[in-house]
Image (cartoon, rainbow, N blue to C red; front, side):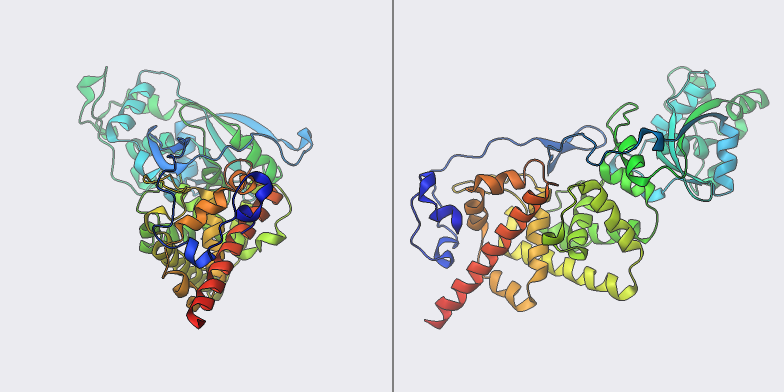
Length: 418
């Protein structure tokens, strides 16, 4: 590969074939361990096993500020619940952060705050064409209120208060057990909802919500995409992210409560729907949003094709790279690096582009040293580490991985012919 052949960078050319270089045990045992990585965090602030991408927080496609139409409404708990009853609020049930779903104690303390007349944070919503609201920030707060006052609106068991800090005498009580005065107080409690009006361009909506931080962890880009783009894509991403093939390939290490798993699946699907070499826009968030819309329009045959490709790629990646699948690897490295999303998509998509027979050929060899050699190219390392949505870096990482696979397949066949 080019990285080994470039003597101008002070490297000595490795005279072995690609086939020989990538066999297990061929690495330099004296190499140093890699530097530490910045990691994504879960909803409760714990580090995950997924490397955080350092993407600039900037507007990639300038838009007219007049396109931003945000209306601030003061409404009541009762009116919000009325919207829920009439299906005019989309809570996207599977949008709940699985590992970070509020406990009954935390939900009870929110109700306690309302009873004590302590203001709660604002809600943020996007208005749909039919006038309904997609709640983007405040899902768990609204779910907690609904569970206590009108559980049938969210299809969940009624919340019984527990773990209260001040109103300890209400422990174990339901909404029906409250006095009429307190029931009215809850129903008439005013809350603030910031609504991005329909007609606001979708890229503008994404940018606005990406900048929101109303306390705790800011929404991830995939959480925003999930909230703003309903449809089959939501459940299809979940199906693939929860597949045993994906979980085994990633060693069950991708925590899904902030939707990192769904984003990884989406990135694979996006580059199967649009060839990497045809990616040119530079707006990676917009590219992934477009992919969700395209998934929504897929027929059964299209879904099945993508499903088979994804599962085959996951199975092959596990067999080829074992515990280092989708992780940076350097010669002599002993510890696992975290999952890298850009490496995931470039490896998985390239595997999906191969025939089943070619994948089987590659599974005969541990190609972790192939990744090590790729990482000796500074441009490739940058392409999976920072600014990963830049077209040149997208092309670089996909082309490098494709070249590695093709060279290995060629050398394997030559060795067999000898």
